[in-house]
Figure 1 (tube, rainbow, N blue to C red):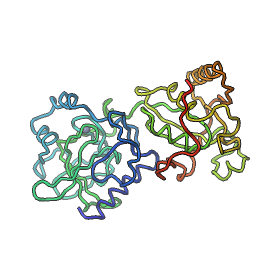
Figure 2: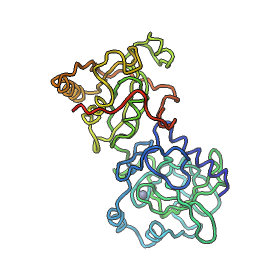
Figure 3: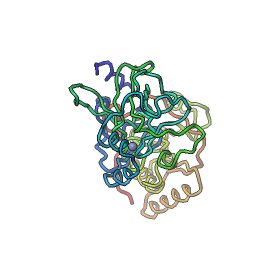
Figure 4: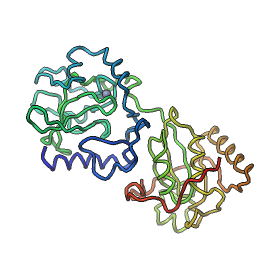
Length: 354
Ligand SMILES: [Zn+2]
């Protein structure tokens, strides 16, 4: 693959950073300098589209592999390639989703399928940039880039740099590595995103709050923004002018199977000083106030319970607990600020309080 092809792969990866920092190590094709979080190991990792990408254990792969035909097994597990022009999905033009034959992770949308004339199903971009794992492949006297399913690491095919716009890439697939679901068909549970929940916290400069939540198990994505005020679509400049009533806040989307609102709320109280009124450390003004914006009664009760625990310990808690209103995402340059810069927060630190 030529250098510009790798550059395009990197660009696709960069798009992935718009909403959330990449949460796992990647193979070839991962943009340099963006894997800023420690290797998550067994920690759950999620894609931008909300799928749990935790790598399947070998035993689970073996269990799923019992359903494969010998041909599928040769391709997915032994990295064979099916004969050109023979795959059952080669000429499929129906609208729908192509998922991993082994684990069900959505890999490609029919919107990205094109006729390449190569004899294999071809796509110009994946369903989600994180759903494909790239591996250098020097077999058969060639230098190629193998593509695997990120979740089960089954062999899918290869990617080449002779595809059409907008990516210039050609993901060359074995039909046998895919299963197709038409648009009106119900996707099975393994092909659906996590049933996620959302919470909103304000604890001073949103850069620092987000830094800590990005490192928490079960967090799918974070977005910093503004809430709690009275103006629509505020800018950072307007919020800093102290005329909007908005607080710097963070929306966190999480997997309730892996964490809970209470666990996240405890973290919130431990990464900022909830006794400070309309300020947080060096940052002064109502935009830096401490607040929990609950989306349901359960969250409200948990927030009040934790505040009571802290008050019983002698803390004079300033955190306001209010019903969540409209959340306005902040400008792009505020998102994942410290991780993009590769620096650490000046404004927040961890203190055990419970
Ligand atoms: Zn898979």
